[in-house]
Image (tube, rainbow, N blue to C red; front, top):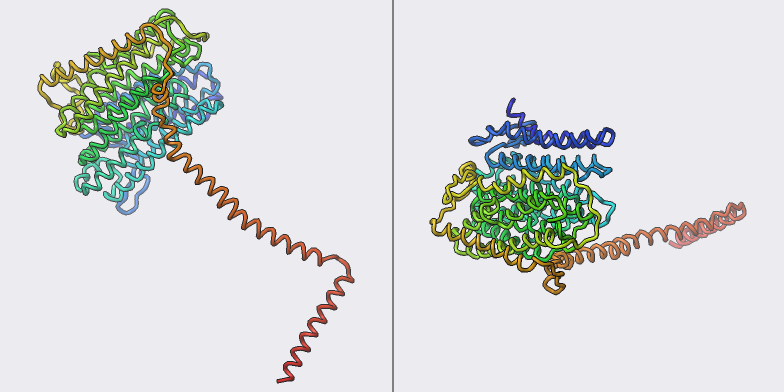
Length: 626
């Protein structure tokens, strides 16, 4: 019975979402806000209370049976194991701070019940992905986060661009969902079970070619939610939603779902060398692509959006290099400092009168709240990978895993990761200098900053800076706690000589410092941005939207026009209209015959009688001749 209480973790946010949907606007605003925060905070407390259930092989809890037919038994079940427990704690903990921040950020929003119900529902859907014991429960949460992202990204739908951004996110991620759906159905057909643990246990019995195909399908499904190449075009436009939504999507929910999916199916995907190489390649190329795009972005939230895309690329690299512990380590530290950066960006936007362009900011070090600079700098140094921060240790562990991989081709991915780290440090400090240094360049009127928007940043700053302790490497005296916690789920143990490890650490430090010095040299005194071909190319995200438009949208639109005009209107409507006109013309002739005059009907009767009489006489004459 106590195991069933595990369902309270996802059910609390769901129940609070339903209550807000039904009654939120009929009750005091404070009630809706407290209810929303209580839902996720309660789930966080329950995760701490039930932590012991994750020990060993974890705990499986069944709520009810969906379908029981023959050998097929599909239950709504949760699996609270060593992989799910830290992820659940991060999702609920970071989401609680974001909900508190949202209360202050959205204090003037009239449609608050819809916002907080969707925010709670978003957390429920993500927890369903994390805790789902079988493919059906996982897919329920997978589609749930897609639906909630559509509602939250386009929350201010009265602006057309916001509605389009929500629609774009929904449609692009649906492409990845198609591939994931194929993979899940194929797995069920091959194994006869929907249990994820059972599928992973039977993975070694599958044919190598089948495993590779399944791995690629799972990768494409993960790319949709995690905004990796080639399904990455939705994430930058998703910044149209409220800032708390951006923080939740990038730090605690949707974008991390793809990484978690690959980690959950790691016993399966790790059997395919080709699949692991593909995962690493996608991660490395996306990391470099997104970091280059962030160099030229003008809107503060778009810089952070591309940085998320890039950092998730590192997580994919970790999975492809065979270390689940490394991927989850960076996922956790990134959640802390990226939520911090987005929430701080929301305060910056308020202080600059709803200005998003970093070239129209400046001077916030002197005229903004004293703590804002320091908490933003804490997130920035974690993102840039400065020594001793959580981001430094987690990113360095991924680069070490790629460098020490037995396949020499992974050295190429390591080099891409090193170059990306340099670009990351540069665009991160570019953002710091343009926002905080110099004199104010905008003319917006600042808004008051509620206390609830300010104090949740401090816990995230501390977690980001000290997060390296979660998996501190052995060569600096750490115990690699996450690796030992995940046990057999952790993947391969990354080992190298201390000389190699310290050399890579020295390189990482040099890269971070070089990126900072380059940004300091370029932006210590403000210079207007250069408008050239390269900057426009990077600003547009390598013209990815234009490429998708030419390759897919325009051909689809042309095919739709052909079906609409050529088939529907010309063929189908033409045939139906022709039949209708023919029936109308025949009806007109009949109308002309039905005059309502007795003389006309008697004449017609007489002529008909004469015709029949003539025909009868003709038959009689012909018959008599024989």
